[in-house]
Length: 117
Length: 110
Image 1 (cartoon, rainbow over the protein chains, first blue to last red):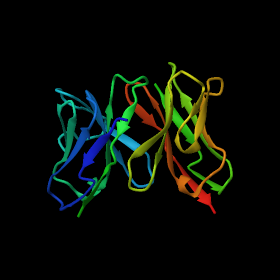
Image 2 (cartoon, chains in turn cyan, blue):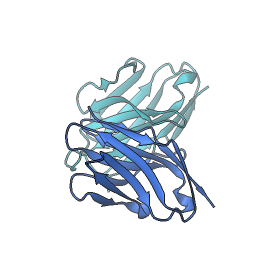
Image 3 (spheres, chains in turn brown, blue):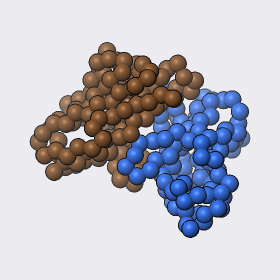
Image 4 (tube, chains in turn green, red):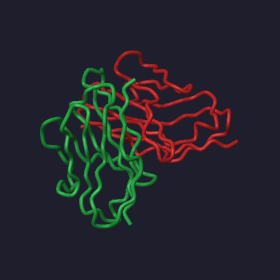
């Protein structure tokens, strides 16, 4: 089946620094990838939709200058959290869509736990 | 607009008992519906999906769900709960993007 990987799986950084999270589709091409944020005991909240070769579309309330998304190839999207603060600590999950699949299914990565100290 | 509503944020069942997790949907077009399971500090694992084929969908780990248009429901069931089923379960509907329910935490009592 389709596999999506994320790297790193967990990261600790100091306040004010930037962190990059990678999302890769391993065995299919993904023209569209999605980035979600999940707070403890809560559901996933869509942050942005990333389309290969174009600018990401951010959901309302998500700071695009803080959460930089780049989708440079059909198998890689990156999320950079710039000038991270403790409130950015969260579980970030990416997903990738294989548009050839019926039902526009998304394949989810294992998530990245970000802790900002 | 599409949405799903999960009834019951917490469900507890005894080991061996029936598991029933409820999901109702709202959609102006024929929906595609999904159930995912999430274990602590892990990503989402697809349990099953409805894509307008058979209304009774069988998934992994003994789970199944039935699409009922008249009730706008897509409830998840499993005849006999196992301790390993304890996790968070999310119902989702998709159009241009996924819309997730708020999740149901399943506890299995030994």
